[in-house]
Amino acid sequence: MTLRYSFQTALTGLKTHKSRSALTIAGIVIGITAVILMMAIGKGAEELIVRQLGGLGAETIVIRPGREPKGPTDLPATLFADSLKQRDVEALKKKSNVPDLVEIMPVVFVPGSIAYEGETFRPTILGGNEADFFSNAFNIFPEEGSFFDQNDVLQRAKVVMIGSKIKKELFGESDALGKYVQIKNDRFRVVAVLQTKGQVSFLNVNELAIVPYSTAQAYLLGIDHFHEIIVKTARPDAVPRTVRDIEVTLRESHGITDPDKDDFFVVTQQGVVDQVRTILGAVTIFLSLVVAIALVVGGVGVMNIMLVSVTERTREIGLRKAVGATDRDILTQFLLEAVILTGTGGVIGILLGFLLSIGAAFAITYYAQLPWPFAFPISAAILGFIVSTLVGLIFGLYPARQASLKSPIEALRYE
Image 1 (cartoon, rainbow, N blue to C red):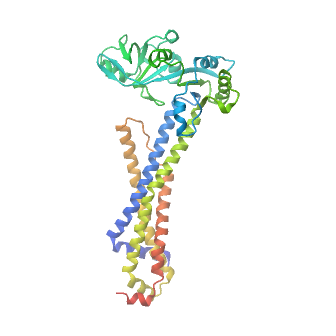
Image 2: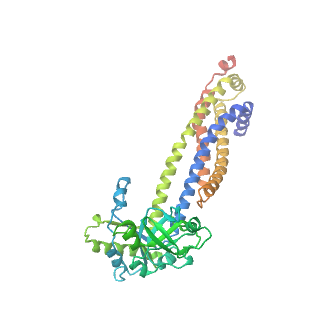
Image 3: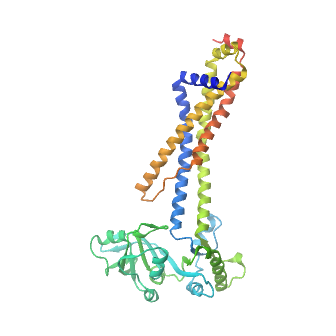
């Protein structure tokens, strides 16, 4: 018997019981759709985070206090570390120490809200330095007013630059420049309203309030250290050399001779991107494996249906053997039926996963206000089809073998 004839016979057998075939396919469709959707969402998350990280530029380096966390238990120590001080900023500014450094900004993060005449808004409050870094590194410019300057930083001036959404929430259509807003227990004069820009890296500029870092340290936080220091080099290819210079400078500033005892760590944008890709890749694989349990359930359903089919078609098997069909022909026919069922389910699952991925990307973008990219990895579609076909082969083999081993005489006597 030719393979083409076996294929036609298998299709005829499946068409005879359409409802049963459809229910069997449904289990495979659910499993493949879930796997495709998980992989597409994981890929979209990776692209979004990498794109946001890219907003800082490949030439940007971030210095953070404390030891580099190796696991979740190390995070608290890192979050509350206070090893980065003003002396470190001054040491890094020296061209003799870090020749390729062109911009530097110490950063402190201030939890809290901002209020004006009974209206309150909870923004991201950031303590930074003068205008050059924001305009050069973040490409942020004022729409109204002007940035605070170095004198404001030195004098710990109580001035603030606010994003467009903060301005709208607190002042509506009225002018915000020169007005005083309250941050914690202090009044700050609004000196600039930033351009409507949206996301820049992980910051939403429209919801950003920026005060001089010295003011934030003295009046809002009561600390003398920084939460991180951002450094910008002239060119991306200068980053590795600059990282080495930073490490040498800070070790000398902190009196550290053993690199294993560093109380700071340096993060480059490419390093963060690689870490994010690794973490998201691992999470996506794990979730896909969990979801793949549905495929096992679907496979068991295929085996069960095929065993029922073999029992119901015992006389058919006996008749075919009586007219010359071999055990191999019977095995091939029933195995093809299982593969056709799961393969069809795989194709439908891939198409459904594709459509749901588009819907998920649109829903996240619309409701979460995130620039979520639609991502549909071709490898996921190929993997989905291969897996669905393998499910048919693996779970259809036992019923097909049971059918092929039936004695034609006994099969013809079956009622």
